[in-house]
Length: 143
Image 1 (cartoon, rainbow, N blue to C red):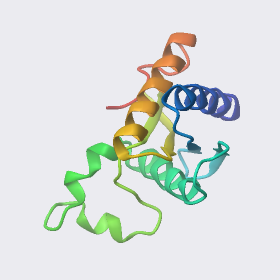
Image 2: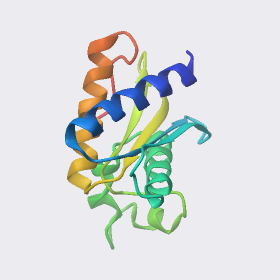
Image 3: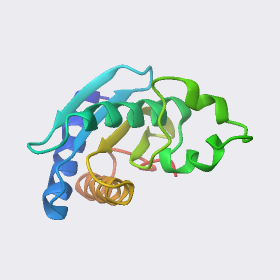
Image 4: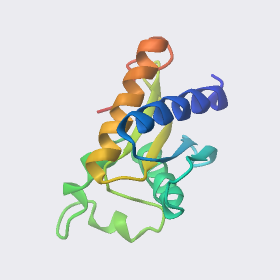
Protein backbone atom coordinates (compact mmCIF):
# COMPACT_ATOMS: atom_id res chain seq x y z
CA UNK A 1 0.00 0.00 0.00
CA UNK A 2 1.18 3.50 -0.84
CA UNK A 3 0.76 5.38 2.46
CA UNK A 4 1.77 8.71 0.95
CA UNK A 5 -0.90 8.46 -1.76
CA UNK A 6 -3.47 7.51 0.87
CA UNK A 7 -2.36 10.40 3.09
CA UNK A 8 -2.66 12.86 0.20
CA UNK A 9 -6.17 11.59 -0.57
CA UNK A 10 -7.20 11.96 3.07
CA UNK A 11 -5.74 15.49 3.27
CA UNK A 12 -7.62 16.47 0.13
CA UNK A 13 -10.90 15.17 1.50
CA UNK A 14 -10.30 16.89 4.84
CA UNK A 15 -9.66 20.13 3.00
CA UNK A 16 -12.89 19.71 1.00
CA UNK A 17 -14.93 19.15 4.16
CA UNK A 18 -13.13 21.97 5.97
CA UNK A 19 -13.95 24.43 3.20
CA UNK A 20 -17.60 23.35 3.34
CA UNK A 21 -17.67 23.93 7.09
CA UNK A 22 -15.61 27.12 6.78
CA UNK A 23 -13.21 25.85 9.45
CA UNK A 24 -9.54 25.70 8.41
CA UNK A 25 -7.86 22.50 9.59
CA UNK A 26 -4.55 20.80 10.06
CA UNK A 27 -4.38 17.12 9.16
CA UNK A 28 -1.71 14.58 9.99
CA UNK A 29 -1.41 11.00 8.76
CA UNK A 30 0.89 8.66 10.65
CA UNK A 31 1.89 5.10 9.85
CA UNK A 32 1.34 2.22 12.27
CA UNK A 33 4.84 2.72 13.69
CA UNK A 34 4.15 6.31 14.72
CA UNK A 35 6.05 7.96 11.85
CA UNK A 36 4.56 11.02 10.20
CA UNK A 37 3.67 10.37 6.56
CA UNK A 38 2.04 13.74 5.85
CA UNK A 39 1.17 16.91 7.72
CA UNK A 40 -0.88 19.65 6.08
CA UNK A 41 -2.11 22.95 7.51
CA UNK A 42 -4.68 24.96 5.61
CA UNK A 43 -4.39 28.73 5.38
CA UNK A 44 -5.94 30.20 8.49
CA UNK A 45 -5.59 27.10 10.66
CA UNK A 46 -4.06 27.89 14.01
CA UNK A 47 -0.39 26.90 14.27
CA UNK A 48 -0.92 24.74 17.37
CA UNK A 49 -3.52 22.70 15.47
CA UNK A 50 -0.60 20.97 13.73
CA UNK A 51 0.63 19.61 17.05
CA UNK A 52 -2.85 18.50 18.12
CA UNK A 53 -3.56 16.78 14.78
CA UNK A 54 -0.27 14.90 15.06
CA UNK A 55 -1.11 13.73 18.57
CA UNK A 56 -4.57 12.57 17.51
CA UNK A 57 -3.14 10.63 14.55
CA UNK A 58 -0.42 9.06 16.71
CA UNK A 59 -2.93 8.06 19.38
CA UNK A 60 -5.30 6.47 16.88
CA UNK A 61 -2.55 4.61 15.04
CA UNK A 62 -1.04 3.14 18.19
CA UNK A 63 -4.18 2.43 20.23
CA UNK A 64 -6.22 1.39 17.18
CA UNK A 65 -9.15 3.43 18.52
CA UNK A 66 -10.84 6.68 17.64
CA UNK A 67 -9.62 9.42 19.93
CA UNK A 68 -13.21 10.26 20.87
CA UNK A 69 -13.61 6.67 22.15
CA UNK A 70 -10.68 7.18 24.52
CA UNK A 71 -12.09 10.16 26.41
CA UNK A 72 -13.99 8.18 29.04
CA UNK A 73 -11.18 5.62 29.36
CA UNK A 74 -8.55 8.20 30.36
CA UNK A 75 -10.46 9.87 33.17
CA UNK A 76 -9.02 9.60 36.73
CA UNK A 77 -9.55 6.12 38.10
CA UNK A 78 -10.12 4.53 34.65
CA UNK A 79 -7.89 1.85 33.15
CA UNK A 80 -6.13 4.12 30.63
CA UNK A 81 -5.76 7.18 32.88
CA UNK A 82 -1.95 7.01 32.80
CA UNK A 83 -1.91 7.04 29.02
CA UNK A 84 -2.48 10.79 29.14
CA UNK A 85 0.80 11.29 30.99
CA UNK A 86 2.53 10.37 27.75
CA UNK A 87 3.39 13.48 25.72
CA UNK A 88 2.21 12.31 22.28
CA UNK A 89 -1.23 10.96 23.23
CA UNK A 90 -4.50 12.89 22.89
CA UNK A 91 -8.06 11.86 23.77
CA UNK A 92 -9.91 14.72 22.05
CA UNK A 93 -12.16 13.69 19.17
CA UNK A 94 -10.78 14.08 15.67
CA UNK A 95 -8.51 11.04 15.31
CA UNK A 96 -9.21 7.66 13.70
CA UNK A 97 -7.18 4.56 12.91
CA UNK A 98 -6.81 3.61 9.25
CA UNK A 99 -7.54 -0.01 8.42
CA UNK A 100 -6.85 -1.90 5.21
CA UNK A 101 -7.88 -5.53 4.79
CA UNK A 102 -8.57 -5.79 8.50
CA UNK A 103 -5.12 -4.51 9.52
CA UNK A 104 -4.43 -1.11 11.08
CA UNK A 105 -1.97 0.67 8.78
CA UNK A 106 -1.90 4.06 10.45
CA UNK A 107 -3.92 6.88 11.89
CA UNK A 108 -5.31 10.25 10.87
CA UNK A 109 -5.83 13.25 13.10
CA UNK A 110 -7.33 16.65 12.38
CA UNK A 111 -7.56 19.80 14.43
CA UNK A 112 -8.62 23.39 13.96
CA UNK A 113 -12.17 23.72 15.22
CA UNK A 114 -14.16 22.62 18.19
CA UNK A 115 -14.07 18.92 19.02
CA UNK A 116 -17.50 18.52 17.40
CA UNK A 117 -16.28 20.30 14.24
CA UNK A 118 -13.13 18.18 14.13
CA UNK A 119 -15.13 14.95 14.46
CA UNK A 120 -17.72 16.03 11.88
CA UNK A 121 -15.13 17.11 9.32
CA UNK A 122 -13.10 13.93 9.82
CA UNK A 123 -16.18 11.72 9.42
CA UNK A 124 -17.15 13.61 6.26
CA UNK A 125 -13.65 13.26 4.83
CA UNK A 126 -13.51 9.53 5.55
CA UNK A 127 -16.92 9.09 3.94
CA UNK A 128 -15.66 10.90 0.81
CA UNK A 129 -12.61 8.63 0.79
CA UNK A 130 -14.74 5.49 1.01
CA UNK A 131 -17.08 6.75 -1.73
CA UNK A 132 -14.17 7.60 -4.05
CA UNK A 133 -12.55 4.19 -3.70
CA UNK A 134 -14.36 1.62 -1.55
CA UNK A 135 -11.35 -0.71 -1.73
CA UNK A 136 -8.92 1.86 -0.28
CA UNK A 137 -9.88 1.19 3.30
CA UNK A 138 -11.74 -1.97 4.10
CA UNK A 139 -13.63 -2.00 6.44
CA UNK A 140 -12.81 1.72 6.20
CA UNK A 141 -11.96 2.76 9.76
CA UNK A 142 -12.18 1.14 13.15
CA UNK A 143 -14.99 2.55 15.28
